[in-house]
Amino acid sequence: MKILILGGDGYFGWPTAMHLSAQGHQVAVVDNYLRRSLCREENVEPLVEVPNLHQRAALWESVAGYPIPVFIGDLRQWETIEAVFRQFEPESIVHFAEQPAAPYSMLNRRSATLTLRNNLDVTANVIFAVKQFNPAIHIVKLGTMGEYGTPAIDIEEGWLEVEHKGRRQKFLYPRQAGSLYHTTKIMDTDLLWFYVRVWELRVTDLMQGPVYGIFTQENRIDEALCPFLNYDELFGTVLNRFVIQAVADYPMTVYGKGGQTRGYLNIIDTLNCVRLALVNSPANGELRILNQFTETFSVNQLAQKVQSVARAMGYKAKISSVENPRKEAEDHYYNPAHTGLLDLGLKPQFLTGEVLSEMIEFAARHKTAIRPEQIFRKVRWD
Image 1: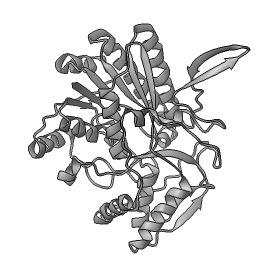
Image 2 (image 1 turned 90 degrees about the horizontal axis):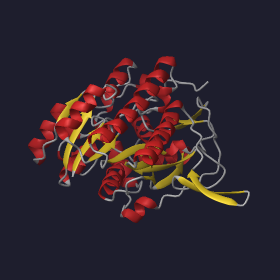
Image 3 (image 1 turned 135 degrees about the vertical axis):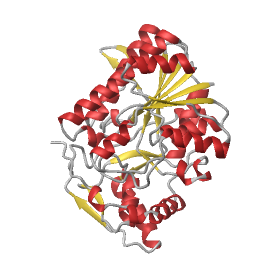
């Protein structure tokens, strides 16, 4: 099928583009380099410099033979999204085009406003473009498990059957975000659910947990095809940060008690989940919600796993408990369902010692590029 990836320059976007093109789909990407711009502004560049989208697409075509058209533009602007839809005529859309970081959204008023405007404006433009150009387009939107928060009951897969005063109805599972970024994801879901009901759109909302890793089957051809690897507090995911900290002999920063538990997945599983969602589309008028993770860990467990492997490789890999800058429960119940993608055929990649050692080896090759001053920025939720 013809698949348009919004946010195709990002940590997920570019690997997804290569993966889907290698599976035989016609893929195009669009991005405005927002993530790159914000990293420069905040002085938190990724570990390894990443070629721009045109350069990556040219390299991928030269080594793998698959062309990926590139569009550069701001999807908040209707003229941009209209031009892309008219030129590429997508049959499916993968929507990654959002400011992706919870800590950045809590940095200051400007970052909060940017997060709100970018994320909601792009989602709205996507909806209206689908309605205008082809209502049969399947929208696959990347949500987050963070929409659910950490309730004291089991987390279902998007929906909850409620019995109240003798009557029953199915509702979207109650959500309680822990940051402004996660709140915009909730608002995305609400926007999509409204237009699914009104215009009978087809939408898959992937509630993804934190992702780790850098290598995929496609980028092993050439390291220049690897995605961003941020290790700073603003844009780096927790396991990626811990790996870099271990290599840099910087104590792994565990927030508070370290009992915060979430569902995690390898970046390879992100690609496979998106592909499975695309080739098994929902019906018209359906909002399908899939919880996208493979294993649950507490922050303490992640730090201990990294410590064990890193010490076996000769690193000190110390763990340091620091004051938690966030407003979150540090010891809580967490039992989310995640059967939908397994039922579609997902074969999970688990967090093994081999996976961690490969990540550590990659970080070690680029150790001289690590800047310890950008690791812990002390961005406070209050």
